[in-house]
Length: 417
Image 1 (cartoon, rainbow, N blue to C red):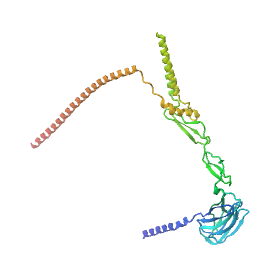
Image 2 (cartoon, one colour):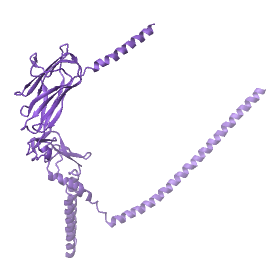
Image 3 (spheres, rainbow, N blue to C red):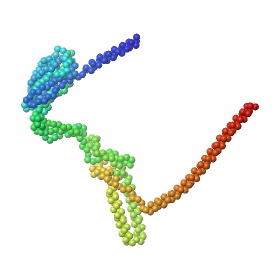
Image 4 (cartoon, rainbow, N blue to C red):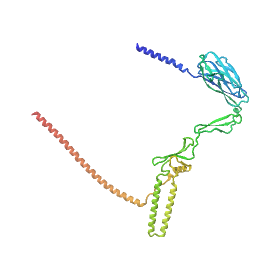
């Protein structure tokens, strides 16, 4: 019995939820929509005013607002509503309507339609038509689009404005637009706007300018290069944190320890050259030999200078926050793309060293043969020891088996006696 009651209670709860869902979904904000129309000057045009999501309305008081310099009110035609009271305020640019039904009306669709005449000198282009309330105020605040139901509860729908597009002769033959002019400059945070105007009808065309940054001319070092990690530099925006033209570089490309090493090597080479010159001066050398040596030295120095100039690294300031001009950055790119890949490896040593190396190799071969002989002797010794150990292990196993057999036989004899 208790189980049946629980089932009945659960069923009732489910039914209540099902029937409650339409009530919740019915709570939709009504929306009034005005249509978009177009016509040539001195012609009439009709704008439809409709409603969606109607929760049930009995009274309506609203105004249709228009541009009195462009249009003249002509008439209206009703939709699902009863005959309203209507008055045109042409001096103020709106037509007021008041409707009072005998009960709530939940119709969706056309409330009414209103007809305007486009004036002869109307300005070509799009003109907004919307609705508002010019009559009622409550609690010190104007109630826009005053609608109410039979319980005297206010209903405030949203409004989607319509428009009347006044056509001009340019709509038939095309507009004669002038040059684009920037009316609003773009920035780091917002877009800009540029416009151009037709020279015939005066209608303006607009175009949005994308967000724009004002980047610095110099590159800022964001991360200094170290022997372990590459460095990074980029151009920063003057007004925000945006960056562009990011470049990476290595510690070796902007200097590093190689400059010090090269300077030490060059100094040691200078010392060597001085020593050789002193030795040469101490020996008896002919004038012809001296001339030959000087020519060789000059050739070597010219080659060294050309090598230094070709491998010269760009003057990059490798300090976080430092600024590097375009010339330095172009030098870095040139070094990365052209100079660095073409730097030659050190020249091979002289033939005397090769001979020494070959003799060393020969000696190494002899030593290797002797080592192989020693290895063979050690291997034979290890093998012999292994054989002896295996034989001893076999004998020990046989002895253990024999001792076990003797013990069993002796035990059996004693058992018989």
